[in-house]
Each structure stands twice: as C-alpha cells, then as structure tokens.
Image 1: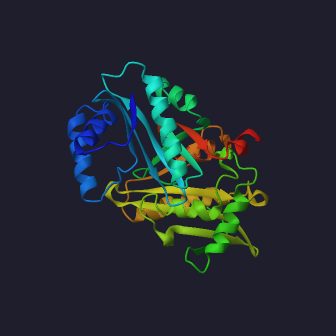
Image 2: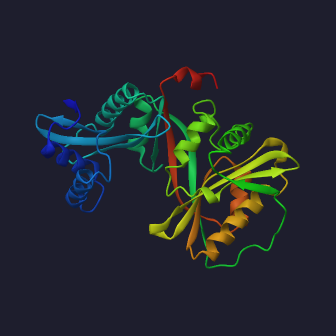
Image 3: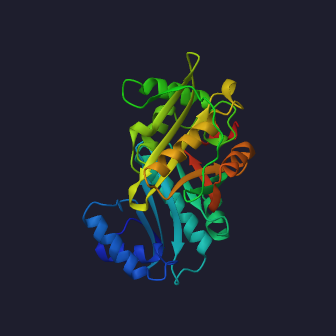
Length: 307
C-alpha cells in the first residue's frame, strides 16, 4: 500500500472522495473542494491518501497553523478499505512526520467521540487524548441575565498592548481546568496568533481587564459574519481574581453587544472536565450544541509524559 501525497489531480479527487465518504454526496464535495483549492480559498497541500494498487482507500488532511502547530482532519476510509483503523493509523503517522518536517511542534485533531474507529486510529499513531470539548451556543432571542457587576477597566487589543495581553494570558493558564494538557506546549504569543485566525479577528472585542492597577482577565471574541454569530475564542482570569464575578460579567457584556448588533447567537467551547466554567455558561443560557474529543500529538512527547 502506498501512502503519501496525491501525484496528480485525479488522485487528489479520489483522495477527497474518501475524505468526504461520510457525506451524502462525496463526489460533489470533492469537486467543490478542488474548485476552492484552485482559487486559493482552501489549502489542500496537506492531503494525504492511501492507495491499494491504483485505488484510493482512505485519506486524511492536515493544515499548518500560524502558531507552528497543525490541525488534523482524521482519515476517513472509503468503501474499498479493509482494515480501517490500521490504514488510518498509517496515514496519521505519515501526517505527523510531514508536519514535523514543516516545523510543527504539535498537532491536534477533533473527532466525534462516538467515532471509535477514528479515536483508535489516533491512539495507535501516537496521539493522546487531551480533553472532551463541549461546544455551546447562546441564542440571543431570549432575555439576558440581569446580573450586573463591575469587572474593572478594560483596554482593547492593539500592538501597543500586545505584550500585556500575552502576560495576562500566561497567568490565566496557572491552575486552569480548561485543557491543562496544553500547558507548556505553546506560548501566549503563539496562542494569540492562532486565535487571530479563528473566525474573523475583531480587535475591538479583544479586551484586557485591569482592576486596581493589575491586569486580571482577558476575553477574546471574534465574528463569524456569514453565520450571524460571534464566538468567545478565549476567556481567562488570573488565579488571584477568580470567583469574583469577572468572567460572568465579561460574558454578559459580550452577549449584550452581540444582541445589540443583531447577531443570532454567541458560541463558546468548554472542557467537559471544567465544571465551574460549564456551570457558569449554563447559568447564562448557553446550551450544548455538540461534543468533540480532542487528541494531541507532540513532537516533544516527553513533555506530555512528565505531566
């Protein structure tokens, strides 16, 4: 079996048909992906397939991100694949080698936790289970909570304040229950670069909270104008300022602004193990939308062993 990049357009199409095998119309999805790739609207350079003789049997995709990490779309096997987990694991091992060659220090994948085949393939290829993320949404057709508190003064993001944002984000990682396995894998500067590419970067809705002369919290909210929603891509409070209502007020303020601007909903994601955050979002009217199991591969795997 040959595993690697497609050699020509026909192999790329065949690999994409495998990647979209779970879609009701895989061929249409594959043609649309090729059209978007040709117009540079999406990146398919990380498409990796498995061929048995000349037949594509499975494919996965990875994309290098601005923070020198990679996001991996786990392999999907077509109807001609025999040992699905073994083929998918072989593709994923190739993906991690290619990602490392491109300077990626870690890669992550998000899969439906009910897809045992994809979870097993990730584990068999050196990925580790990191967290179960719950993706939430707060519809804005219902009244907002009447709770009001002073979260302190805030300033919005620009390059003059970038170092302050980085410093307070680093502090919010201490003792955090939100994906603690990420700690030490990327700097706050890397995280900021990544968040800037999640949806439409909107610096006026990236806010740093100052309370009594100390920087104590950040909330980073991006737009998704095509969907008429906004997303809280990061919310963090430093340890010494937790349990004071700051996070709650920041969320309420973001909901109120989104409602005033005509958005339909605000999105967020929370680690299922982060019970305080889950309860806070629930109190404020957020409801579960779907779940994803997050898996992590790190080039410096010893960093994970030491945790």
